[in-house]
Image (tube, rainbow over all chains, first blue to last red; front, side, top):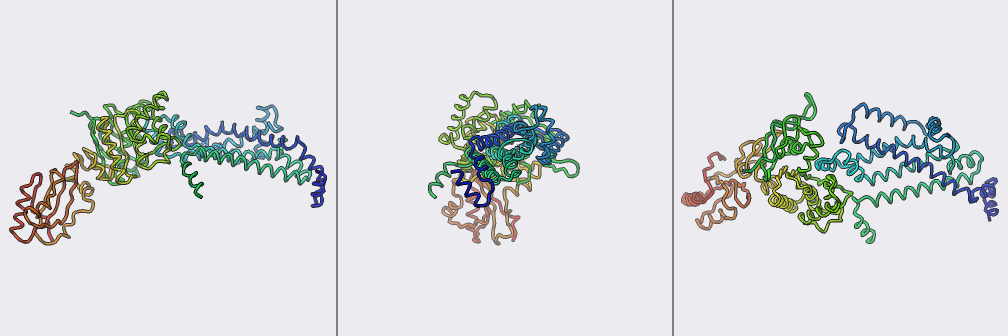
Amino acid sequence: MLESLAQLFESWGVSKALDQLQYLFDPGTLPFAIWETLYAPLLATVFAYVIGLPLGILLVTGEAGGIRPLPKALMQVLNTIINLLRSIPFLILMVMVFPLSRLILGTAIGTTATIVPLTVAAAPYVARLVEGSLRETDRGVIEAAQAMGCSPWQIVTKVMLPECKPSLINGATNAAITILSYGAMSGAIGGGGLGSMALMRGHTRNQVLVLYAAVILLVLLVQIIQSIGTALCIKTDKRIDHTNTKKRRKQS
Amino acid sequence: MSQPMIEVRDLSKRFGEGDGAVHALEHIDLTVDQGDIYGIIGLSGAGKSTLVRCINLLERPTEGTVLVDGRDLTRMPDKALRQARKSIGMIFQHFNLLMQRNCLDNITFPLELTGTPRKQAVARARELLKIVDLESKEKAYPAQLSGGQKQRIAIARTLATNPKVLLCDEATSALDPKTTRDILRLIRDINRTLGITVVVITHDMKVIEEICTKVTILNHGRIAESGLVEEVFTNPKTEAGRRLVYPDGVPFELLPKSRVIRVAFNGGTAYQPLIASLAIDCNVKVNILGADTRNIDGKAFGTMLLGLPENDAEAARAMAYLAGQKDITVEEATDYHA
């Protein structure tokens, strides 16, 4: 079975097709690669939100005219740090945070070690995403909440975050996908997964079939994450009148 | 005697500083008695919305004091102010409901803030849904409601904490005339049954006529005139007042050359057909040259310019008939010229 498939690929000019197919169809290869591709970026996304969500909230509430203005100097420092971190290319940032990874995890090499640079790179991005979402909160609704005697903390937890939930979910989907693609670069520092598979085998060892298989799987993963995110976003958004959309679908 | 519920003393609000500062409000003095429905009217940019926001301190006045129920809000620390706001309800032009919460949860929202147990809050919310006549919409989301329904939910939400004052900021300006009347009627009912003091901000005279007892005309950040609605609207003393009451002006120059009298209605019943009676009872046909009369609580107010017939006898009959009517004064329109 594999042999005849290999012959077909060889006839198209792919060299050493059998080796590559045997590698790809080994039960240990792809499931493990997919697992490695997902777990570091997804954990990093969670950590990035632990840091980025409060920062994003501060960016909106702390500005002049926000619900709890903070000193202008503090806001400037915060903004500068976020912009600075966002402007460093990920590949370079990854190398720069080696000492931090060693401090936290004891190692700077391997899939787990990539969680640290991924988090550092993603947190400021998440902060900006959250900032963008929260800015969409209707000023009038915040005003109504203030008129009802809401404290700034209650406005954040009971008005801004719940009212922006669909937009926040959308942002989280974007963050997860971006971090996933960053993670693919981590093959360069010994991280595993589909990205490193494409780099190490596909590119370096010129294994075209492995390269394409890895890329196709990455595309599929992104599609799945995006579909889940979009579905969740629509489902949670009560501004959309679902009874009507169903009716409309039936009619058409 | 009724107690003052809201007292605004020498209030000014400036936006910005120095030469570029905008004087939104200047030296405003206002007293709203307990149980009143008080109207504040003005053209856009007059400072009405800023004024109503100064009453619950959503806008902090630059100068002056605001007393609600005898307590000075301008001197309160933040926490006490938030507490005080719970007894000052507010509804808005664009309703400002929480779009991700259903109607019931919108109404329980202010109760959550005070830490009311969920069961109790839900019971109270159902009670309020009944008051605003939307019991069937408990589980609906604001996006599924019409404008009038949204405003009803907003009213229910604001009543949840038993406020003493209800501030309405252009609350009917986004609604059609029929819905506007329904909402105004609801506000009046609430005022009567719950004794809540109401402040109505609007640019629409009809809203004031429909429910207010007293009115203040605001013009360029200052009070132009204030008083009982019927007095201010029948006889506006200031230029700003006249502009509001007669938006199109009284076009004297367009009237034809003939005997002209001015008939003023001073609050007699609005249901008596004066001109028709004149024609039938005296057999005199008068020409209505201009009229601006209003029906306030079933009483007629305003003035009418009548052109009398050329025939002296007929004209005299008409004059005599009109002079004999109650709550009407007749005078020759001497300031009328061709």
